[in-house]
Image (tube, rainbow, N blue to C red; front, top):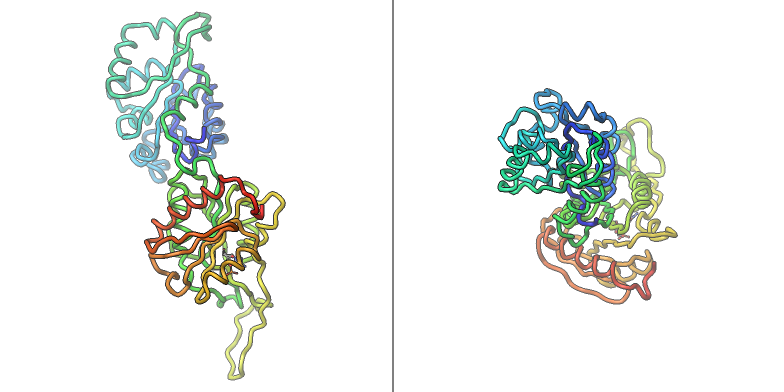
Length: 402
Ligand code: C5P
């Protein structure tokens, strides 16, 4: 089910007794790593509560076409553009009829008209309704428009009849949906990335920091998500937009970043430390603004925790990848860092050329080898870095630190 990782699934539920199985379907999609949004018709709400689906997916359930609140958040056209797949399960005879005639008289039928995503339906209805020529004609029309029809199954029905018209089981639906997507390189892998600088407060208005823009970490997060990974991006203060499909955690200081990293690492296969973490912080943070005087002023500093070393020291550590921005003796310093911090891999680069720039070149080092990447823009190099990380991650690891 790796191919569903990070996919956007819009689950439409129409009115039928099989709607109780949609809760399990939503749960299975979420468990497979998909982001699930649910749209229910008014009739569906009679069978199962939106609250159940909201709890299972973590997203607000959409029920109305003309809902001012919903339109202010994700409006119906935005919602139609959002999914990688729309799956309507159960799809009632009435819904199939409305879809076939191109009606847009509720939110779900409107989305079917407005979307360019593939649409699949899992019909569920009484066997006589399924067999009726009107339903079969509607299905012919829908198939001709490339709608995918999953099922139905045959067997005993809620009304006491036996025959064709039972909705497929949620597990069967999920397998058919997964089959529509190919596995991407990082499908199903959980990747945590730190990015940007940290800020170490001196008093309420001043801090110590560095010039890191966060661009490299954000590029890695965007590319990893595009390659199917489930990405948590722990970011210091930067002026960058969160990449699509990435879960972002904002932090300020090194100690905040360590705390967030330890939480994220509990659920992570690969940890990539790209952040330019401040090595020191002021020994004391004044509660009031420090006043100017003509005397010389010195600040006592204490070392910050080393985040990536703390992660690498965990018993059940993820595959741990560091970055080293150096101004001279790049490879020598980087190699000693790889060993000292017990990393599985490290990318070294020239700090003077990299900070704030859109381009980068890097030397990749790991316990048994090296490779050179770039120069190229951070997006392209990020893709190459992830391919290398993936190769090292999947290979048997003799002599590694893990
Ligand atoms: O020691 P240096 O700062 O050069 O090491 C760089 C690597 O270590 C990067 O991967 C950086 O994110 C990580 N690091 C860290 N915590 C620190 C300092 C650096 O995770 N306090």
